[in-house]
Image (cartoon, rainbow, N blue to C red):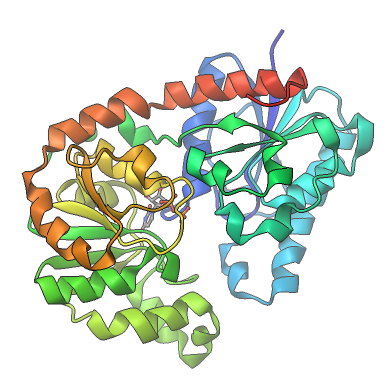
Length: 380
Ligand code: UDP
């Protein structure tokens, strides 16, 4: 019997995302592999999503990422409108065997509220759970709702109530991991890259300061709040500073950005992103939060670039110190490790990514978890 899964990607970005988009990248990687395994996928996303699926459910024409800078009630309004659309669609049909939900707890609560007629739900946790216990305080829906994490460390930090509903964890994967032709080794330049949202947890301020102190070239790539290009941020004026990530950038990072040793290039996408990472001497993750999944970490390995990072969150699960990267508990030591990372083997990083983080493995693991959720299995 064919399994039909409603994959809820949410209303924020199209799938695949135009540039930045951790969750959407994961879904864009997972869905083709699931379909290869015979799973029918109904994608709940925005109309502009181009990922080939069996069917789409949409409320918004395109990604509502810009709404994330608005007051919280408007953000909730977007979430609620999207989820009402999903629930309406679910009420109108009975062919959905399982909902695979990637949108925070609002999605869980709404689906669980459908009562006994709701299909079982697997909710993938993408965040640092210890930071947001309130989101998952009330897991209505009992055995019909299960969760999975994206790393063991993320689940270990989850509140007990949530862990009781867990069916295990699945390390993230990216399409970069196996596409050896598209990502043939490139010559290494002399720069180091930090790829990610500009945010205190990702630690770009620390990276930029260390680059100035230790004397390495650093490229910061990623959005600042909702702004993808430096010229858009510059044009936004003072009002933009209401966004905490914009304030963080201006106050903590910009003082080190001199356009020469330290540059911020905005969001990079596609080939430009891959080349920037593949030609870097190292990918730096000066993390100040417990990184839950680290898509960009796995991408770096698959592009043959060793990872230098604070040993937080899932980093020790993804990186083997001395082989695929260098980890430390001491922030100040990161600068020295960046200089030492040139001694690591790019081919070793690529091999590790191809061995552990393929899209096919991720999809197989999810099919196992779907089975556990549907048969009401408790713990792994
Ligand atoms: N990303 C991108 N362009 C950028 C910055 C990030 O394409 O300029 C992508 C990156 O390759 C990764 C995702 O956005 O796939 C970020 O996911 P990650 O799990 O690393 O971070 P988070 O979800 O916490 O933002």
